[in-house]
Amino acid sequence: MSNDGFLSFPQSFLWGVSTSAYQIEGAVDEDGRGLSIWDTFCRQPGKVRNGENGDVAADHYHRWQEDVHIMAELGLKAYRFSIAWPRILPSGYGAVNPKGLDFYGRLVDALLAKGIEPFPTLYHWDLPQALQDRGGWPNRDTAYYFAEYAQVIAEALGDRVTYWITHNEPFVAAVLGYFTGEHAPGVQDPVAAFQAGHHLLLSHGLAAQALRETARLRPHVGIALNLSPVYPASESEADRQAAVRFDGVLNRMFLDPLFRRQYPQDLLNLLGGLFPQPEPGDLDRIGAPLDFLGVNYYSRIVVRHDPEFPLIQAVQVQPEGAEYSQMWEIYPQGMYDLLTRIWADYRPAYVLVTENGIPVADAPDLDGRVRDERRIRYLRDHLVQVHRAMSDGVPLRGYFVWSLLDNFEWAHGYAMRFGLVYVDYATQQRIVKDSGRWYAQVVAENGVRVGE
Image (cartoon, rainbow, N blue to C red; front, side, top):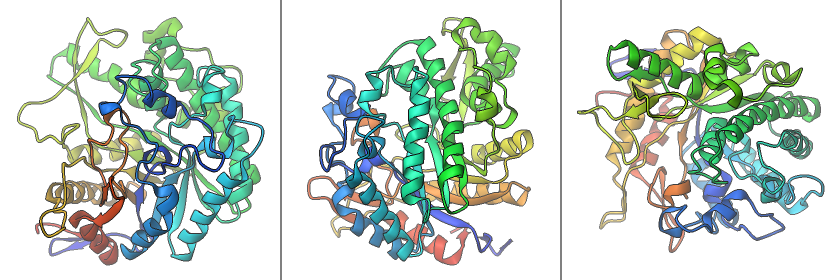
C-alpha cells in the first residue's frame, strides 16, 4: 500500500468532509423552522463568546449550491451534513414542515448529481426548544419523538440516501448539555445528564429501526461518537485507575451498550443511584447491530487522580512539551491507538473517521491566499496513522475532515476556524485554503504523500 513516501488507499475509500446544520446554515427563522435549544442558549448572557450565535453563521441555507460546487471542485467523494430537526418538525413532533424537507431534498439531489455520497446525520445537538420545554433528553418521551422524526426523514430521503448517522457525539449532548452546562440547554444536573445519555442511546436504537423499516434503499446505519484514548499522567496506581474511570465515562459508557448490550459494571458501581435503570428491552434496542461506527477523533486525554473532582476523581492534564492547537493537544498517535483499540475490543462491521480537524487562526494574506500549513501537517500526520491502522487490520472505509467551512463553533462563537474553506463572515465570501487544495490532491491521488 505504500512506496517512496506515498501511502495509497483502497479505490473505494470515501474521502469526505463534515459540517452541521446549526454551525453553518443560518436562516434560523426562515421557511417555517422552529426554535432550537441553541437559539435559546445563545441568547443567554455569558454563554457564548462575544454573545455570538448561529443566526446567519456561514449562510449555507442560501449558499448551499455554491458550497456543493466547491465540494465538487475539490473532488470530494462524500459529504456528511446534519439535518436540523426544528426545520422538519418545528414542535419536535406532529406537523411536518414541507419547506424543511424540500431544502434537504434539493441538497441531496445536488450532491448525487455531482457524484458526492450524502451522509446525513439526524441529530447534531439542535433539539427543538419545544421538546426541551417538555424535559429534553432526560425525558424518555424525547427518544420516541426522535424515532418519529427519523421515520419522516427516511420517507422523504430514503429512496436516495444509503448512509445514515443517527447521532453526533451523544457524550457531548448529555455531559456538556446537562452536567457541566457548557452547551445548550445549559443544565447542571448529573442525574439529568446520565438520563440524557441513556435516552440518546435509546433514541439511536429506535431511530435505526425506523430507518431500516422505512428507507427504500437498504440503509447503512451508524452513530458518530467522540472517542479518545485515555492515558494516565504517571505510572502510579492512582493515576492508572483514574484513567480507567475516565475511559469509562467518555468511551465505554457508549461503546459497551452499543456493542455489548450492557453498561460497564465498574461505571455502574461508581455512579450508583445517579445512573438510570434501563427499562426491559432498552439495551437490546440500543445494541442492535450497527452497519458502521463513526469515530470523531481530535486529541488524546491524559488524566491524573484528583479526589476533589466529583464522581470520577479524575481530571485532564495538559502534558508539558507537547504541541497544542487553540483547543487541545496535537497527538496523531492517538488516532492509531484509538482505532486499533476499538477494533480489538468491539469488532465493528466497519469504521469511518467521521470527524478529524484542527482550529487554526488563519486569514487571507495580501494576495488573498490562506496559508494554513499547520492544518495540512495535522491532517497529513493523522492520515498516516489512519493508514497504519488499516494496515494492521482495522476495517476503515472512509475519512471526513472537520470541516468543509469555517463555522460557528458552539460556545467559542466564531473564534475557532476549522474549515478547509475560509469564510469571510461580513461578506460570506468563500476562499479555498491551502489545506483545501492539499486535500483535493489527496483525494485525486487516493493517497497521502509523506515526507514532503
